[in-house]
Length: 394
Image 1: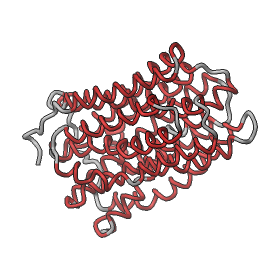
Image 2: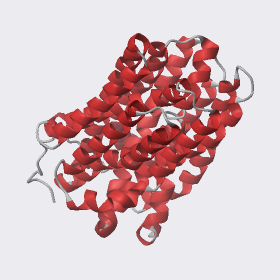
Image 3: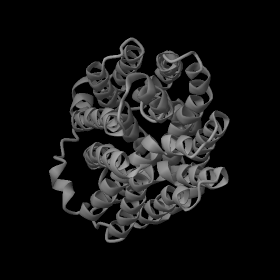
Image 4: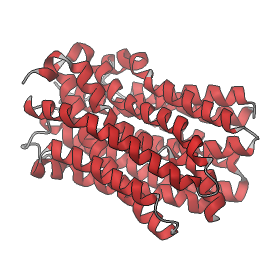
């Protein structure tokens, strides 16, 4: 079957619903649910951040195991299995008020989300390799699926939160329904990709540790990105609410952030195609850091909206820059290991970020927590400039 070759844009658009589910719905929607869950369950910022840390720990476990699972069971089975497990975890979150149970379920959602995101990233890289003139655009479209999930969450969650003090549970059900639709839409296109053999190579057994040294600067820069971005995405809505933003303004902020993610793929496509070193990651880290600091300069809603748009415009392309770096600098059989390595270091950062940001927010206020996030992102930009192009690529 040749559908993937003739219609790469439609194929990658369908594949992008994986990130929409794994991150847009299962992870970032939590920022919208956080204020209501804190009020209803009596959670501190540190406890609320720990739920995201549990999610990131599961994400790390999934990232470390997903390539081996794809080798054993096939990429499509891992991708779809991850989608189904994510749906189960979302639905279960709607059925419990136990903090311990929520911790376990957020871990499960992270694990399954990494299965979807990591293996989907390998498939997107393979598809991009078959269409080198549009490689940066195809990778950007795949990762911009996150924005679709963010926009849908922004439109749905506030409506469901209005259902009384337990409205956050209704919101989890709504997210489950959206995720079910996304899974159905991924089902057939993923079969086309499998039929065209655009999947992780069964022969790809490169240990991740062998790639760590030549990619060290980029890995450290991406670690800082993981630490910094998750604090912004977890607590910024709570900061805006504390500054007096209305529900309509919060919905507008999250919607614009999501739309910026959706349309960012074309904005940075040439940057990802032209540079084989750490420059794209450095630029995008720097812009994300500036975006995270904007709400600290002024509490006006206009500044908050500018922050969300700028952050959304560079967030997923920073993620895509790692896949582009792997594709430019490593032979194809090493792509699964390279992508899994970046996904794992990203997960380590996401484990640390919510805990530190939550602890600072409890002790010194949300502003100090977001200051930490912004400065960490800028540090990541500085480190990423040290990454040079490798000589072992294509």
